[in-house]
Length: 174
Image 1 (cartoon, rainbow, N blue to C red):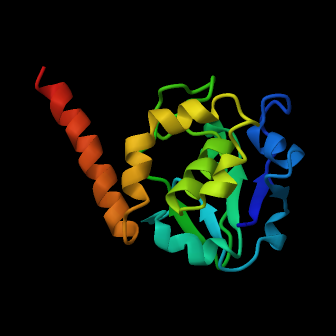
Image 2: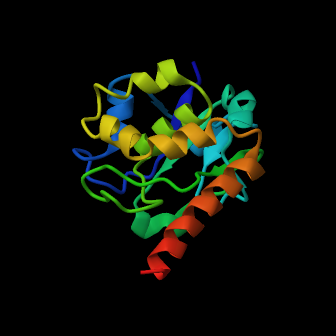
């Protein structure tokens, strides 16, 4: 099992907070910044590299989600020694951002990461805890299946870029 760690800025409604829900069900553990293990994979939209199956070797030190609202996304702290990774193109299925690309909540980000890294048993634990999780997987199935076959970050980014281009290209042809 990959240790899922949460740095929580306490910016969202605790009743709707997926990070708190992950903690409640033992799917994640909250940690302060100074307790994030060096070499952990930190999910960040500002990461230079895209998460890939090759990152599983680092994720065994920790898969870190930084829980803060999208309106405060510029407040993401820098963590020394981390492997910052952004997620490829995926569409949210949560009630707040349903259908919006790249607007995943913390649990969706962790779920997608686990699937991309081939951690299916651990990912399966999310299904009964989040009612939108099966829909998230269904909405993104083709993409997740492709991403999990990639050899590295560049391969995942290429797949993501090609998919986005196919959407933009077909929208422009109408």
